[in-house]
Image (cartoon, rainbow, N blue to C red; front, side, top):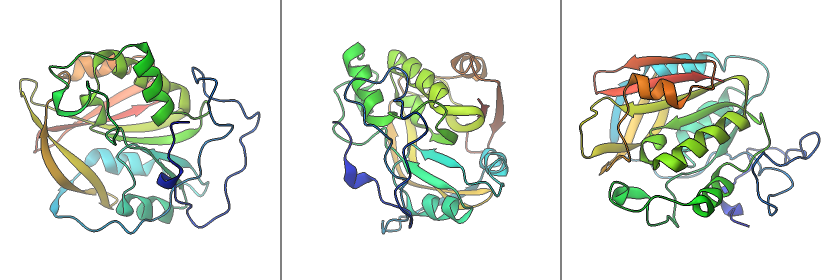
Length: 243
């Protein structure tokens, strides 16, 4: 089993019951868990230096979460104290994955532009490690800039799985760099400060696996209901996708 149970910290409640039917997500292997892990709780991660920026994409994304009904939110940027505290403060359950956590295969990370592309076995392992959830499990997904660093075959499979595990009408928030010719781009840890402000920390340069313009982003999410763009002053293209 690929999951590390230490990554899942309970958010002050009993473990969530098995979803109705108990079926694993489509495309899951035979070793899929009977039910998804428990939502994470606020961790004691140390604070980090960074810079704050206003985010129209975040503002609109969070406006969809203003509901008394508890929702399930997936954050693929790893366990982040600020995000967990903010989202659980809205009454929602937060699940955490980290597309960049080790062990990473040879095609991942900074060498993405020059390494070999993943085969079907590697793609299946990545999906089982990061997106092993039942169909329509999540109401919202925070993708941040993670999709920029996935090779095309893995990117396609990941977006297809996201379509499966997000409920109809659910929203995804993704960031893409607007400089399509850049050989390296800054990658951040994104931390929610308030309903319209993000703190960007742990800046480092990474080689994107491919560049994106508005048309390619629309094509990437062609099976979703809608795609809406926001262009910020720091050249990050914010995208709200509706399932």
